[in-house]
Length: 530
Image 1 (spheres, one colour):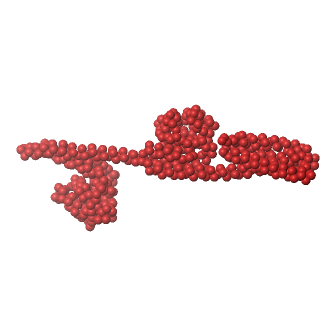
Image 2 (image 1 turned 180 degrees about the horizontal axis):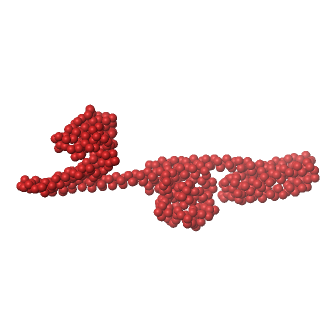
Image 3 (image 1 turned 180 degrees about the vertical axis):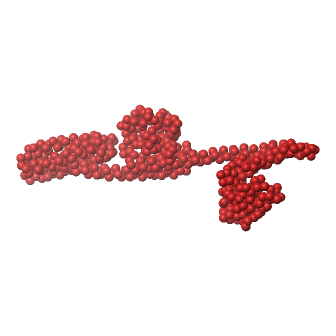
């Protein structure tokens, strides 16, 4: 059954009110007595009220189109009810021998009063019904969005997320169709990627840009540029929708809302909702839809972050494979010929004395040290996953035993205690520090190892490191010794970082270098639990 539109219903009430006003004003003009004139002022005032009410109804300012029938029914019921009451009174007067002189005037006057009263009651009833429907609708929308939000935040794939959004919104009563598009900033265009309730031909034919062209001035382009929901209650009453009028007319589309999908400063696209409701997209509904758009944007950002992390992990795994290959080449393909060359040089030096052979032997020793450091460096990038509760003093003694400097002295300053570490890698760290001290302070260097509040330190009595160069000492290739490889302290930093320790360099009490390792004094919970 078709409904009476606001324009038709309101126009009918306004015309009836105007006719009644003209009739009542004529009666007012015929009044001769003051009391009679005042009596005749009330009906035209009431009929003018009907005119105002009809005009406002026709302009859609009173109730929605679905409630116009209801208001008209109340108006007619009010007029008929009071007119019937008046007729009953006239009938009684006629039966009593007092027939009215002009029964039409009072009948129309009381009918006007009844019509206006009925219209006001109908307006109250229509608005109450509208509020109830609005609340029910909002509850359905909230339920839909709650389900959609719960599923969205658990999606780990962007395409699945987009399909879920479209499916869940179309599954709800308020919405007829939805499509979602991704924004491409370089092309300044939004391309559909998921939809529900539409045929594929319609969605794929859509052209939405983000520029100053006709296809960029519509609600889609505005949503991307402003990051605010754009609602169009009547697509054929909005001139910015003209590029899509033909498509929308073929598919029976009357109203829509475009909700931007964004997170922080990044706009990922939007989803566009279509419905044939006349009370479309009110303030509370816009608020929950906007919140859904932000939730989807956050989910997309999380998915992209996870994808970037996974890609980074794949790159690191590939790099580790290449490092392993490199380490294998260094360990086997370079060390073997180097050992052969070193052996032949030693044989040649035994057969004859030559300064050239001595220089060659030193060069080969430097190459061996360089290869050893590079090999160690290639193997120190991994984080320590398994810690052991080791005696720091025992590891220090093992590392010092490898120092090829008989005149050097090791001094332990205090109780070193125990440390959670990979003992083998900690020993490499200490060996590199001890070798660095011998290289820079001389073979008679004194090295001191002692505890700190949350770790330990290694210091020497050498020349130290100038303050303006302390930020460089851990860089690969940095060395102040011509015979140094430049990798020793870089290895130290990598091993410390793999343990989760912070390393810093300063000046020792004897004026030499002092390396402090913070965070090594508190074993991880896994070690403490043993």
